[in-house]
Length: 368
Image (cartoon, rainbow, N blue to C red; front, top):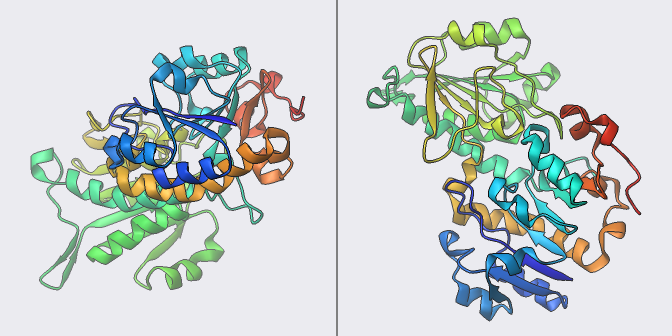
């Protein structure tokens, strides 16, 4: 298969889809690989390293003009012109994407395969997991940073100060993002509370993370009570393939203390907070109702080398399956078929179609 690896152009998105070692493996499987000039530079990988791995360094147009295009993030508007009847494999988050992107994918009969909806045999999300871990680690740290007085925060430093705990951190969700955020917060010595829809997991979460973790039921009433006095609230909920529900309403935000911080890790799927809207690494925060909102939609892009290595490690086996066997064989496995969000002019993931109110464009049989 002819494969193009393109350079990311989203604001401060410094990751690249495949490392030079990954390219070498694709070449060993007899695929032809083009890498856009300087695609890996910000992740610490030079064009020369890709050439040594067997890739051809090419311009943007050439890299997009391949059977399979590998990206990290969804195409932004200036890239829509490159969409045609090829396969794109990337984080797409179509449930919260601009309608124009979806319309362009359907119009051009682009096959769009999303990392974030691919499941393994255990219904685990293996391609979402490493970026969730990095975003979770980052969420606590960035939330604490914006609490600083010079950032307009309330001036509370979470952690242990002379054997006394300081800082209230509330995490909405109990998955990988939430668990990594909690580990960082607990390691600092903060008071940490976690909302879960599965309260029967309370003791398991406490055993996994810390007996100091407070686990509560994620009802609106419970969430509202816990965030009133929180210093940092981290939104880490996930509704697979679908838009994330607003678990924290605008009225709840209004009841929080001035200078508190919310970090919406779920923003790429629409966001946990009713007051959220996507931000960028260049302009990461905004203030609403005296609450600092951090809503960067590509958080792991801040740590591109770690993120790229972790991403390439988990995606490469699936890229090889797709390239070696073709789309039809790839999609025979149920978990992999869930990753196919668009094909032949139709939406092929029901959760996505429902989220964007395009069920009339949904077709489950996309094999021909």
